[in-house]
Length: 111
Image (cartoon, rainbow, N blue to C red; front, side, top):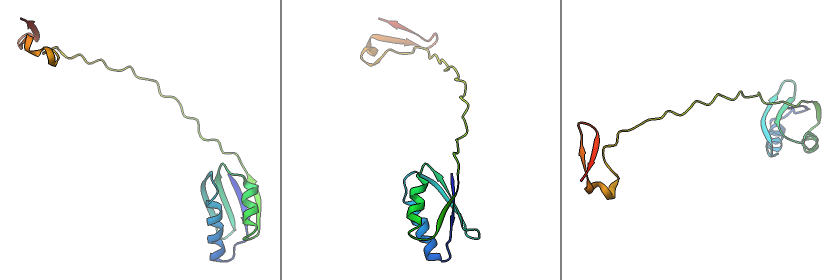
């Protein structure tokens, strides 16, 4: 996360600044306060390179650069898989003509 001080007085320059910063790979988010002229850029970017490009458009300075760590995720305990048993009511396809299903007791009798 880096905070930049920009001197942006016109809407057209502000649009150029947004377009220039958004073209860098690794930029996650961009916010800008028009009253103070501060722009916050979040992401894995090379801040001096951004400032070098922005100085061609307007006056730009680096105020702060911080390393923001993502919050640690707690691993969830694994639940054991449920075992579901189905009664055998018939055999597989090629052998079905050899069996007779008796539905009262859920068993198969081979003849």
